[in-house]
Image (cartoon, rainbow, N blue to C red; front, side, top):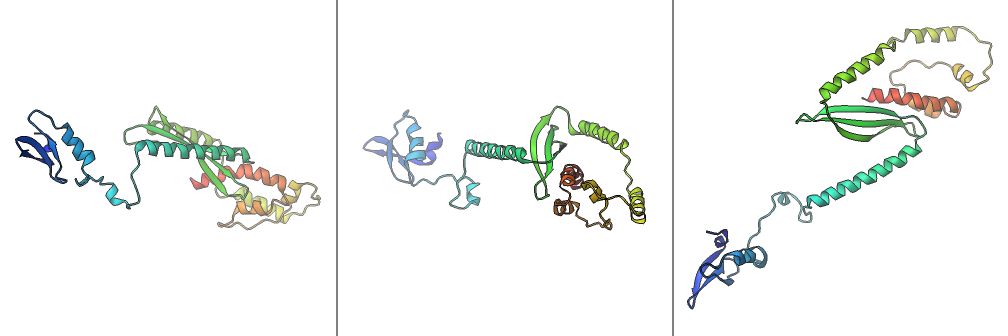
Length: 237
């Protein structure tokens, strides 16, 4: 039996077979072999008193909030993406220093590899900024690529001798403070080297120091902005 009869009952009036709506009591002709298409149409579009199925997701939302279609959602996401891309393109054209680019790789639950490319830079207020340039899929999983990353990283660090104790720097400070110099500060670099040394402190903000001393060392400030972006984003990882 058709599901339409869940909303109708058969009645006979003057020998003619009708289907009477259980909700609005409307009667539609329904002789044998007549079909139920018109009954479905009445239930879905005509009858105003028949209870309607409610989207369970809608029951959790406020009455003024309506569910949108996936096409509308897709269009909104693409519009936001294009607006953000245009904004970042304009921002790239205004950056006055070097940028540091990093990659982040991972594998999803279905074993698909992904790579994200992120840029870091110091803005005009000497604040570290970052934004995603690209996110793409990879043919290999990140476990294999991670091995390549580790190999590259070890090759780089093997060529760089980093003395964590900074013994050589401490010796340089002692030698500079204990010996007098007769050279006159004729260049910006000379003036910088003749500056008194600051005590080492964990809370020392090197970005703020270069921001406030840019008036005295404008050229060195530009160089520091290019160099410090690499060390700053590395500390944030």
